[in-house]
Length: 124
Image 1 (cartoon, rainbow, N blue to C red):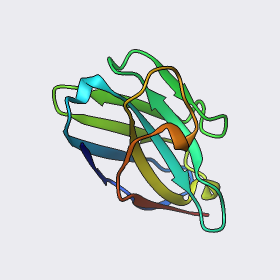
Image 2: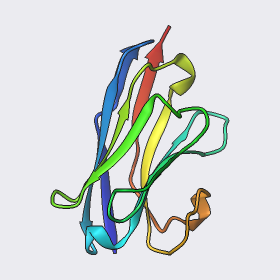
Image 3: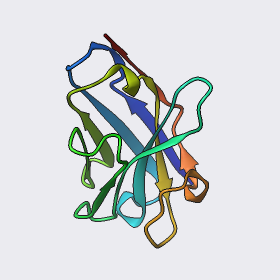
Image 4: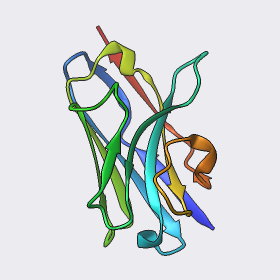
């Protein structure tokens, strides 16, 4: 079992920055990969970023590449999403998720555990 709790969402102006955190508990944190997804009203859940078990391998969705950075601190059981140069189209609920399997996976269906989400709203 893995429990995930996100924090750090809020309202920010376009061009601003936010840092999301996701605290994990339960299973050994370094034993699974972590991802961030987002979902806006009326839209499908979208892959944002993924970080491997040790934190040295990362992947990003095309819409956030160059603006967002995913990282993890295995000593603190926490994964982060640094979001810079935010745009109104980044407005969504942001969810962290744990992938206990192996292989590089970007689809939400491969992730085993999910947080409750944190809302990010970017005003123009």
